[in-house]
Length: 116
View (cartoon, rainbow, N blue to C red):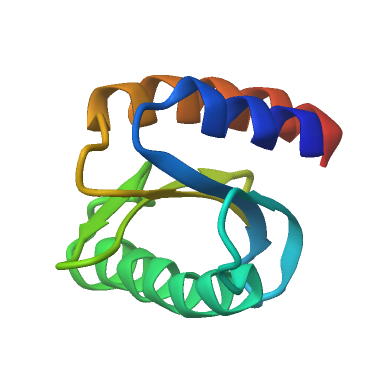
């Protein structure tokens, strides 16, 4: 799993971390080129992904979210669900390429799904 995450950070312009988390908020595996706390990133974004899933399935009747992108002043994150209980997190900087994040993120998620 670590090899896939490391390669994902290399492949996506502006990516600085990639991690697999559970919807319970626990970090499964991660790779970062900074000293960021991946446990905290996973815990916070698991809650956001669960809330989005609840809103889409129960309130909007739109089905499960297939991806989620959040952009802040100093942090952008692309989330790709893996099965029902896991997700891929890709942390991006201001010069990131969202198209690459989506393309390579989906590819990595498919590979990781076979491992999980």
